[in-house]
Length: 172
Length: 284
Image 1 (cartoon, rainbow over the protein chains, first blue to last red):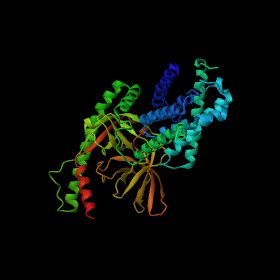
Image 2 (image 1 turned 90 degrees about the vertical axis):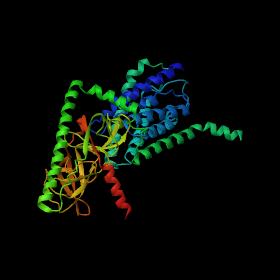
Image 3 (image 1 turned 60 degrees about the horizontal axis):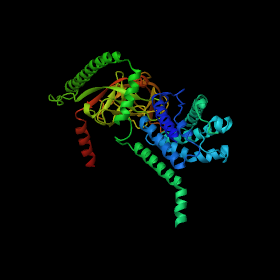
Image 4 (image 1 turned 60 degrees about the vertical axis):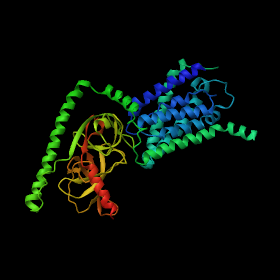
């Protein structure tokens, strides 16, 4: 329990600083920005209460918003993401999961974890960019931005997860 | 009753979800309605300090100091130049056109400037913002113009004690009244949303004569910028839909990707001009 909280706090701080100081400045070919901070929401324990998941997702979204002058956009996208997280896991992995596990390659299997990350990131980015384009609508540019950013985020999250594999208790 | 309560508790994440989404959208809405919210955004002190740390990591300290002195000097000279131009135009009007239009001898050039560093900047978002390290304590107020060595940057929107947030030309909220150097017809400059180098000058009447390569300068009508500050250069033009106006592609003079030191322009008579304009509208 203490471990989970401690890990959560460390993830939160490190991911927010990394996102604000480094990743927000990356705009590959002026379209792709990776949002690694979603890793925090992705890695919450599977059996965490949905209220907790919603609250902390909203919190990290709001923190990112404060630092990048986007007031509310990330918070809205993260809250939606947190809301669909549990149904998504049940859909992809099934209901008979052992208690207290963290989503990872080992617990979900490679294919299922990748699909989980992909769908999760896709929902987040579509929401985020749709909200952002309320001020400035250009359908083709929007689709390109969503596609490129999803690819960048998924690639980065899967890479981080691959290197993080040894450090994680598998739970089984 | 108990069953109802149980049901509500078991669905409590639905309520939380709806509540949090409402909060988010209220925040988004208030940001979109052109507002001066001190609570959020990087004008907030903590956010400003975090941004300062990151900009310190990037910049070389001793170069900055030298650069600042040069900038200060450059700014003074530029202000003097604008002042002299202003006086010269008065003389012209006085001698050539109207004998009665004698220059106001008590009038002085109403603009002064404050030098500031950029602590946070973006060029590739749809709505970009620039944060500066000077705030109310240094005399910065909302609606002041901001220029770099090369040309116009934007207009101050939010000010805290030690930081201020600028809405640069690269933001859909920004509209700047501009004219082609040498003509007095003005249009409004907006960003095209893609490229940090290009903006569009729209609503320029069709009979205005210009060439590709002509300089675009501020019109001076808004009391934010003095007239004649460089904005950019015409690179291309096309007719607008109703055929009576031109839409010009303008290459911006300021390179927003390497923005470092800027000057904030203070107009002592802005409040007065706004007040008299409002009174005129009220009389309609």
